[in-house]
Image (cartoon, rainbow, N blue to C red; front, side, top):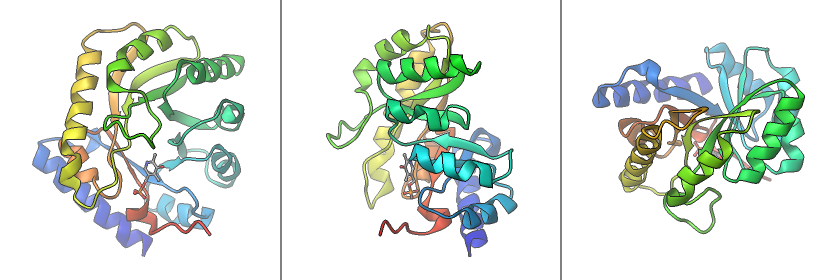
Length: 229
Ligand SMILES: *Cc1c(COP(=O)(O)O)cnc(C)c1O
């Protein structure tokens, strides 16, 4: 069943890339495995997926030793500074940096372990009060502040678009994200590369791809609905 789900997602991704005149390898599919058991992750791994997303640091810590070394773990959820220790040697990227303080703490932890953590800046593009993320107009100055930190490397932007039944509703959000990324990239801020746009989830990843996503984060579409009981 998971295999069929994945095939369906892959087909839609390929079609969206084709519609947008983009090559399939410009878009990384991250399978969001939060709350899902290791056995299900292994099933998707066997189909060739290597990138998995989690939103709780403890889940990365716990699942990490139980899966092959070539799994790339993406930290996509809100990260508290006291939980950085769980992911600093295990995650390949933190998608959810929205403050200087968090970036500074990640940088310190990374330097202590002799690594540089790739990060994305989370933008609250739709201005939803319930969401984490920095306001679009403050994003460039936050990046300028974070860029000199030795233990992190800013590689682009991430957003969680509003929940909606109609993915077209989010097209303008994705378009504004693309523009913000292009505008900031054009400033050529030292020690940043702004090559990634992490946007699009089960309900809207096709529109996100059409609008320039380089990473999509798909949970329900691959693993089925989550139960939090
Ligand atoms: C849960 C989650 C996703 C995946 O959501 P689905 O709608 O299940 O695809 C993507 N991004 C973030 C940050 C998440 O927390």
